[in-house]
Image: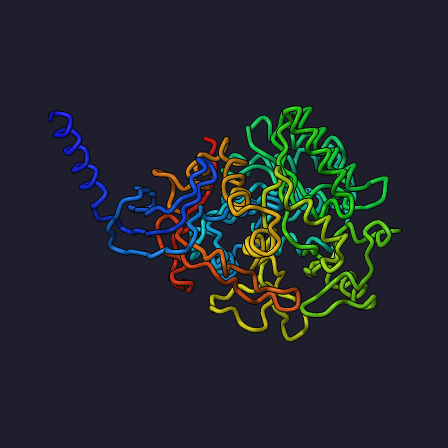
Length: 515
C-alpha cells in the first residue's frame, strides 16, 4: 500500500513536470544523439536557448512542431567555412548547419572581425582562428593586416610572402600578430600553407609550438598538393604530423581529399599511424572532387605544376564555364585573386570517385564544407564578393556547390543512395566530431553537437527520404531541400522548409580573452 502510494506520487510529479509548457516542443521525431547512442522516437522540449527535456511522454509548448517521420539531429558544425556574409549563412542554414567557423584561413585582427560580426545579422553561430597568412602578408608588405577577405585576395599580386623564408625580424613580426590574435580570443591558428609554400621549417614549427603553448589547435591547408615527389602531398602531411609529435600541439588537417589528390590512401595511412601513437591529429574532408581557390595560388605556378597536379586549363571553371589556356593565363596575370573551381578529381570516373569516397568515409575523418563566399561578375567582368541581403540569392550570383550542399550531399549520396555511411555515423561526422575537435579549449563547444538535456538548442530536423543537395558546378545557386526545421540557440532559422528572413540568433564562438 505504502509502495503504491509513493509510486503514484512519483508518477504524478513526473507527469506534472512533463506537462509543463515549453517555449518550443518538437514531437514524434526520430532523435539521434551521436554521443549517447540514443536513436529512438522522442519528444523534445526547449526553453530559452537550451534543450530542457527529451521524453517518450507528451509535452506542450508555446510552439509545437510535428516531426513525425523526420529525424532530429544536433545542428551541423562547419569547421571550415570561408563565407560569413548573410547570404552565405542562409545557404548553410538551408542544409542544417548551425555553426560556421573560419578556421583554415582565419583572419586578423581578430578583435576587429568579431566586433564587425556582432554588428551584422548573423542567423548562425560564428568564429575564426588567427590567420598566419594575414600575419605573413603584413610582415612582407608592410600593409595591414585588415580583417577582410579582400586583404587576402589583393595580396595575391605579391609573391614575396608566398615564396620567401622570413628573416628574423619578419618572423618575429608575423608571430607577434598571430599571438595577438590568440590573446584576442581566436579559436587557434589558421595555417593556409598551400598559399605560401616558401615558408621555412622553423616557421611552421614555431606556429605549432605557439599553439601548444596556448593549448589550442592549428588548422592547416598543407604546404604541397602534388601526386609527384619531391614536394608531394605525402611529404606535406608527414611534415604536419612531425610538428604535432615534436610539440604536442593539436594539429588539424584541412580537406585531406583535395590536399592528397590521388595519394589519399598513403596520407590516410600516415594519419592512422599518428593517431595510433597518440599524436593529436584530426582530419576533415568535403564530398566533392573539385576545390575552390584563387587562380593565382602558388601551387598553380612554376615549372611542371600541370604535371604535378594532373591539371590543364580545362580543370578550372569560372562561373558555369571551363577555362581556356588563354583565359587562365590572363586571369593569373591580371586578376590573380579571382576565385575559381578546380576539378582535381573527376567524380564521373569510378576510380577517382573511389579515392574521394575513401577520404569521406574514413572513421577518423569529419565533414567540413570549405564553403566559399557567393560572388558575381560586375560590368567590367571582374568577380566581386556578394554582400547583399536578398533571398533567394539573385540569379547572377554563383559559388561552389559545396557552399549550398556539402552536408545534404552526405545525407543523400553517402547515406541514402549509396549506403556508404550509416545515418548515425554521418550525423556524428557532421556534429559531434567537430564539437569534440574544439571543446578542450573552446568551452562553448561542449554544449554543441549533442541532443541531450542541458545542451544548446542548435537542432536540425530533416526528412531522410528527401533531404538532398541541388547545387551543381554549373548552377550552385540552389538551396538544399528536405531540411524541415533549423533552430539556433532555441530560435527558428528554418521553419517548414522555409528560411526565416529576420533570423538573427547566431552567437560568437570565441575563446576567453587574455588579460
